[in-house]
Image (cartoon, rainbow, N blue to C red; front, side, top):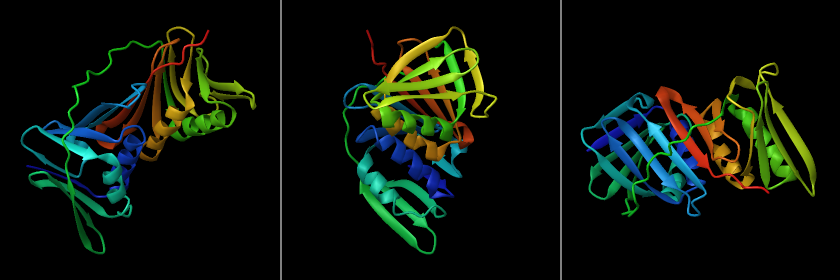
Length: 248
């Protein structure tokens, strides 16, 4: 019914790790157009979208739309058994079971039971943002880690020259400036100066996607949700949406 092949298991393992930080189980939709996922976290504070068109894979076979429900913790546990250089194959060759093969020094085959997940179909958020910043993913990850030392929340502040992440609390204050001169900021578009505050616990989970991408694209407006894109090979991407923390 469908089969995908990835020469290196590292990328796929990183994708599932990044998604499983926010959601426990989800439906993957596989069709001739590629593989996708869209799900909310249990508290409905964050959403994750995954889009992997056929060029993302070394081999992609699918003739019709298929919905595959998986427990992400169990899926992630199996994928961690693969070394980075092993070839990964995923195949739905029998009803109710996903076949996972690792090809390296040996051929190892796992079969994972699928689950029925009754969820409503979520539309992709339609939002317009005043700020778009392309940032080196590891620089964004380090800024989030710095803010997490100080507070539970971080303020995103943008002006035409730079993107600033700032946090303050009983433990002190921290400010991280990202700009093109320092090399951490690749591109910045600011329609109007903006600032908004977001939860660091969610952002820290989202930063697990840094293992899959070199560039993060940040979109936000004042007191509006944050959109965070991680660009993957083959025009794939992981996208997160995070509700803002409203401050007086």
